Image (cartoon, rainbow, N blue to C red; front, side, top):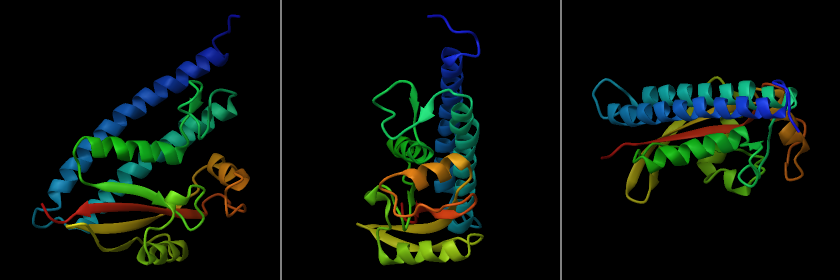
Amino acid sequence: MLFTEAGPTAQGGTAMRSLVVLAAAILVVILLLQDLSRASDQPGISPETVADYIHAVIEADRTFYTIHVVERQQMGGGAVAAENWRAKKNLLPLPAQFLMESSDLATKTGTRVRYRLISLWPINPHNGPYSESEKQGLEAVGQHPERSVTGTVKVGNQTYFQAIYADRAVSQACVACHNAHPESAKKDFKMNDVMGGLVIEIPLEK
């Protein structure tokens, strides 16, 4: 069966082109992360400033993907985002999975900057806070989302500067997914609610 230009085939192609563009953006992010990680060793550039730069880039890419790829495709009857996106070619990664995949990709390039999403109400148990300090950080950004929570953590022999930023619901797709998911511990999210936190960790030692 043939489809017109506005049909599923064309929309799927649009989604794939958007993902290609975002893949290129991820590579730019990786290069920025590597440069910013090295920049944190230079006098005059604080780890807090480096973390803020990284956060701005990550949030810009993820917000664009959420609104202009995932939500746009779903509203237009095109490809939808789903947890099992790897199993089917016509599915898109969820925005949270997009972030995790980009973080894994950045790590594979050799950068030691780490970032991940955590929540007090994680759908995936692995996305809960790793420590009591992270739990307290989530509670703090929930009350004051305009401010990040910073500190240092020790992982093995490496010390990291850690910053936790509020992770807000930026689209109705995010809200609907979390509220409807059977494993979700919180089902009354609204637009712009703080759903969790984005953790960024920068190594302080070479």
